[in-house]
Image (cartoon, rainbow, N blue to C red; front, side, top):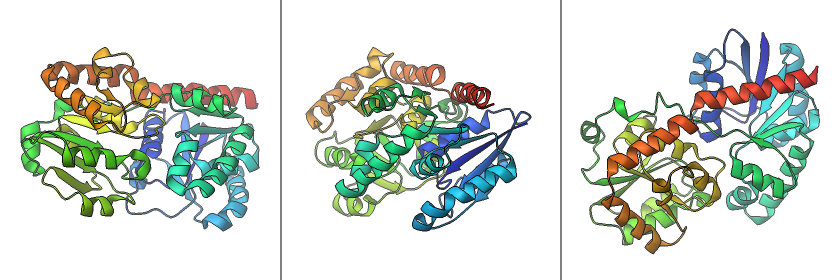
Length: 368
């Protein structure tokens, strides 16, 4: 049996962890034994129980960030030896810094963000650039790595790092509109019988939520409402500033599928993405998506001229308004079917898992 260890900060419910879950879910349990090494204590919004149900063995370290930087490489190395791990797969900067120090042939990393944008947006110019320097340095030393989208791989090539790409995937069986009745769901979730635009994910500066809020607060049609599902450092500030019957701040929800099924459109004005899982989930639910014109968004809808028409110039409320008005005149069922078909054919979690398994096999063959 092949033993794979995944190395992550925590199992917090977010895009990279959801992607890891989808990889593991489709691996043959008779062929692979899965370990998950976590570096910090789990919070309330954790998926640890989901991974335990997949028969994963959770191996927590739980050092502080500063002490962990010095001690974690030794602890991870000891775990690899004791568990006789065949391959270790990191997802995130803390894991990548550990793999850099271990310098193993069996090391593998998935890159999920454009760090030159995300780290500065999240941590500010000085700390952001320090993190960028050390993370790029680590990635250059890690022998095996992939990006989660083609456009992200091209971006890292500009940074002097070559890597393949495996697109993120969505569980198209779980995220499937056929299982739900929109009218009944709206009554259950106490949502209005209006045209609902939904955003799911972190409410942070890099996602440019303020542009979407300004649009719905000032410019949108009176029958349009915005539903935001998620938490983040900016949520409380935005709730106080944008008090409107057209804007719903719902916070963290475990039943995101139901909120997507109750909605009409998805919207994201993000400045940076790896390969947006939330967009893939919305498309799998048959939601046409209004997306900012970043490369990763364009990559998702590149095979459909109809969905490309929903990509708007970021921070341009007039362009967004025109595209919404025009789209409402189109046949909704056609757009919905196109979105769902792209998710099922191009971005299924099963095909993603199979591609990762191929990468695992290559690494194991070359490390012998």
